[in-house]
Length: 232
Image 1 (tube, one colour):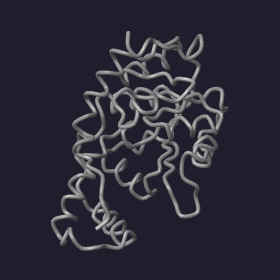
Image 2 (cartoon, one colour):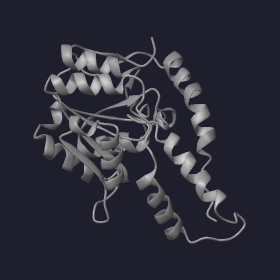
Image 3 (cartoon, rainbow, N blue to C red):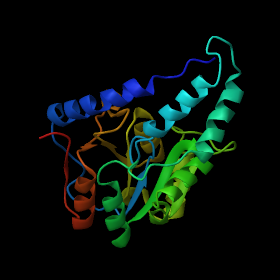
Image 4 (cartoon, rainbow, N blue to C red):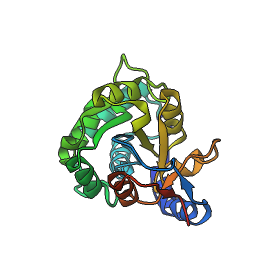
């Protein structure tokens, strides 16, 4: 069987990496004033703790077969997605502050979209099950005819759906792929401190601002003020 990543280990290291980010990164500022009217979000590791869904699926797959035998990667992927279609989505899957922040931004008229490499149907299912889909004007996931991030195509689709200029749109993610996607699309980017890939993404230059919490994003956008990001 194709070797799968140890997501449980990655999950355990997540809090440690977040602590390091909050204590070691100097404050950063996006512009002089926050003037973003639209936000494009990555999904996994940014808004939801998807490892909590993925790990049980992998455990189920491993328990159902002889791990010493070879398996076709395409069939494994299809099995994974088939289980994903039916697995229950925990109500608390969103990271802290996500529900409140999305609700506040939506109520204030801030347009939001999802830009993810997760398959389209899974993006829609998870956000629908969580009751969060209503906050987004567009949910853009991966599709057979759609280039994956870091190609900017999905970001451009989200931007078009939001009907806003690049200058007034922020891209918020948790990985080097997200940073590269934002830059390829000509968008400002910010990383979340709790993300799966944030620590690695900060090795890229120029350094990308880091959000300490969802409430920091909410308050800065709604109050149209500058925001110090990272530790401090």
